[in-house]
Image (tube, rainbow, N blue to C red; front, side):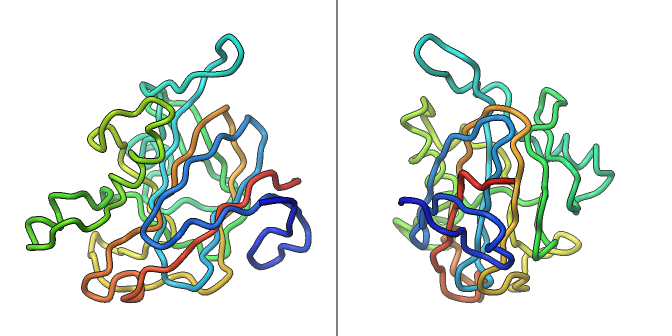
Length: 216
């Protein structure tokens, strides 16, 4: 979307390209090793499911290595818990860091819950409801993903679920963000979580932003 200031607090220190993810939809984007990017909550209390896959060089471009991906299990092991802090890393199932958290205005996220998925809503009697798993599969289709069953367990940004309790406990306010530094070339997928039951996501799903090309 052109060169703009990234959204979020302290944004005057960086410039970047902003992509708005519509409520209940997803977005995939490529980052190179050393790149910085932000996930921004525009209206507050909106969870963003996030996943990433390593890429590798290929003639005239790159290919997504779906075998190496962001892993919450490996990350929990390295952090000895489920609350990453600024300066710490998110890890892949190859036991290598893929992202570093370099700024975080919320500091409350989740690494224990899966993405919402079609059967979750069907079992609640809701047909045709969007889900994070299908959002990510949809935006990863151009990179070779075939099914939402291939989506890895996500890093649930801005999700406040202490002691594995799925309750409407909002953590983020308008303009809050988390900023990452890529430790590998990778493709990232972010889903503006469509779960609007039981007052989750503030009871109303809202847009979020991804800001890429931030200067460190």
